[in-house]
Structure formats: structure tokens, C-alpha cells
Image 1: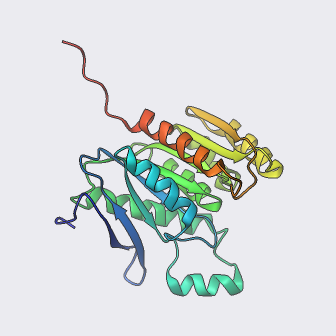
Image 2 (image 1 turned 120 degrees about the horizontal axis):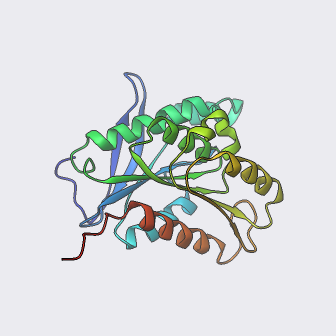
Length: 228
């Protein structure tokens, strides 16, 4: 990892345990000062076109990104049949914590401030992880997330959190409203005009990316120097 180019995306492997290794894609723009870890939702992976789109927008402003699989290939194959892991927020959040620790111990990324971008159930996993790592996570953005699944951890989240929900996704809007009321730190619920749950409508994913970009720049930027 020490020789990782700052101008390209390269595959990486994150060891979770002696038997579990997760695949990821790490992009480090030159002079990056912060990195956003993507926690994908159920049935999704580092190859998610929606999250890859958001990641590219973030990279354009100098933010590094880590897109990684919360499940192994074997687990994903089993999940398609049994659907037994997609709501296992405890398991998923522990893997987000492990990936965060990997960032902190990898020379290429250890100096960078960390943010989380979570989608669907991945948003709950990100919030639980942030509750466990309050001094490491500087900002969270949720896209069409299920923050309600974070349960009691919501009352322990002080990290600035932006909840992005499609304005036409009525059921998830209500779940996000309830979850937002329990968050302790700075928070905002933003409804994306014209969007349904998957933000497939023209221009809606672009809105998500721009909202996320502004939030991360605001909370992950370095503290300005005092004027002379």
C-alpha cells in the first residue's frame, strides 16, 4: 500500500478475521486530506453504479474514497437465497469498524480524516460504527437509508449527519424523521425533489452527490489557519 498511486483507483483487501477478507476499491486523489468510506446496502457492492457515481463527484473535489464489499462473495451467494445477512446490522457495522481501523493503520490513508456514506441498510451500519468510533468519524451522509435500524446507537451518534431521502419515498421519509429526532449531533433531513427510493429519476442522483459533496467538504475540511 505504501506505493499506491494518488492518481488512480486500485483494488485492496481488508482483513476482517483469519477467515474473512473483503474486497475494496481505494481512490486517492493527489493531496487528499479526507476519505469517505462507502457502506453499501443489501444486495449491493463496491460495483454499485450509484455509489460509484457519488464517489466520482467526491473525488473531483479532492476527497479520497473507499468502496468495499460488506460481504464476501460466498456470503453474497448465500444471501441471494436466504436473505439472512442484509438486516444483520451488528455484523455489518463491525465490518465498517474494521474497515475504518484498516484505513487508520494503512500508511497511504492513516493521515486522512474519515467520513461515512451509507445507503439503505449500510446507513444503519455506518451510524452504529460512528457511535463506536466517535473520535474518528467526522461526517456521515445517508442515501435512501434505514437509519432506524441502528436502534439504540442513534442516541450515541454525535457525528454531523445528513439524511438524504427521495421526496416520493414516503415510507422511508417517516423512518428517517424518527431516526433524525434521536441523533444527538448536528443533523439534517433533506428531501430530494422528484426522487423515489433508488434515485433513478433524471437529475436526482446528481442532487444526492452535490448534497454529499457539500456536507463532507464542510465537516471534513481542515480547520482554517488564523489570519496573521
